[in-house]
Amino acid sequence: MVTTRFSWSYGGRDVFLSGSFTGWSKHVPMTLVEGSSTVFLAICNLAPGHHKYKFLVDGVWRHDEQQPFFTDEYGIVNNFIFVREPEVVSSVLRPVASIIQPHMEVDNGAYQHAASSSGGMHRELMARFPDADINVSRGRISVLLSSYTAYELLPESGKGLAVVPIWDDSRRQFSGMLTASDFILILRELHNNGSMLTNEELEVHSISAWKEEKLRLNGQPDGPAQPFRRPLIQAGPHESLKDVALRILQNKISVVPIIHSPMHDGSCPQLLHLACLPGILKYICRHFRHSPGSVPLLQQPIFAIPLGTWAAEMGVASRRQLIVLRPSAPLSSALNLLMEAQVSSIPIVDDNGSLLDVYSRSDITALARGGAYAHISLDQTSMQNVLQLGYEANIVINGPRRCHTCLRTDTLHEIMEQLSDPAVRRLIVIEAGSNRVQGIISLRDIFNFLLG
Image (cartoon, rainbow, N blue to C red; front, top):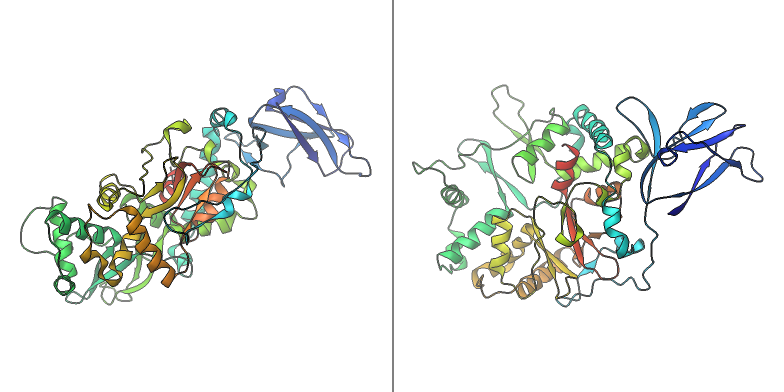
């Protein structure tokens, strides 16, 4: 049992506390705090997990609007609290010690929290947030996104994205997007065919030729050359944020170009913006930042919510298996996993499973700088060497590389605030102190969960 304090700060003559932990039938008397005429206090011993509660003030049921609250399917408003297992503060909260490169930094935000005792982990994981309350929160977020349009994103998202729109000059329209996945495809095909092209030979290959090769590899029927046969996935500025987010999720893409044509026939298209999930997530966070209690889900720890990819020992059901690699693994293994396992990033760990770095699809573009891709063998180049190339390119352009992490006890709102930064595409869930990788929470995980 965990000693838990409840307070009512709004006065009254007779104030009682009641909740799911009392069966709602027993009322716990609250005591007026000495020296105050409005603050009442009660202390209860509660089991770890979720609890609902309310105050009976002078015979009238009240809830505290300054504490997390929610409205159930019957219109009843209750406060709620999540009681954690007693925590043990780690004596040393050390940053990740990278054996790969000393310039890698860890996002130390995760270390501002105490480390939870491992013995209570599985009991915590059993305390899931109720499905009915999840649906209430999803509904409120869905209403928000349906009420605003892509215009809201114009100053926010699309910064630092590893994608390039393709303009078809002959048809005077945007016809596709060039992404990091395309570059991975090029490298794999060169490797499979035993080709080591010179920089000059690579320069003469057109983008349309590479796109045609991609269609062939994906099983598209042969026939006359029809560059970019797949229609460009786009959105107009007046479409809702929810429609834009769903278009990104359903088509498994990272951005949607917002295109406006001033002509009725669709000619003279103007590219207004590249809409992405971080911009939409930032809009959600900004809207609910000052009223988080209206969406109870945002205050829940991520391990109490069914989202993300988790290690098997965490006892959390995941649609995908958590995949990690060692620094000695060849680059070919990483590229195959990124494309065939449909994952966007792979944690690089030491022999103890502690986080060293993360390799993602966008990192492959570091090989394009200086033409490094033309001089490496995918089977003989280790992840350690590839990451070194990435460090050198990143330090020159953006400064030291950061590895963004979180703890499983962080709330969904804290996770969303971090992921709303366009530079943060995913968070690695680590164990405080040991840095052992426990799971991954990605932008796509968040939106798949929020939009059901």
